Image (cartoon, rainbow, N blue to C red):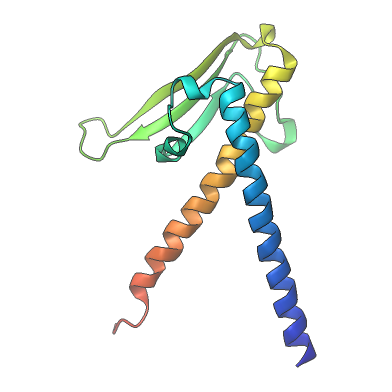
Length: 143
């Protein structure tokens, strides 16, 4: 009985730590959204999550070399929009352009990278909630 209670406590702690991290992440993401000028292209913060994804050009987002610049490239935040009714279903939308990556201030570059990572963190929770809800369609069905 004690081990089941301990497992429940561990699960509860993990869930609450994720929710706390998510709440803190959203607050930081909102600040970065304004600081790096994404609010000029996306008027309402919540509309960010209508995009399928947000990517970055000019800087690596790979864990092993996160933030490393790609010489000769331009630093740009790109969003992928999707319209199932359009002839061309998805398209890239520039959310922010900062010029040649070599000439971008290091602090700004770090904020741009942080913005994309924080966006992806929240988007992963939104996707998780979406698929969890979809799984509800399979409960109590006769196969």
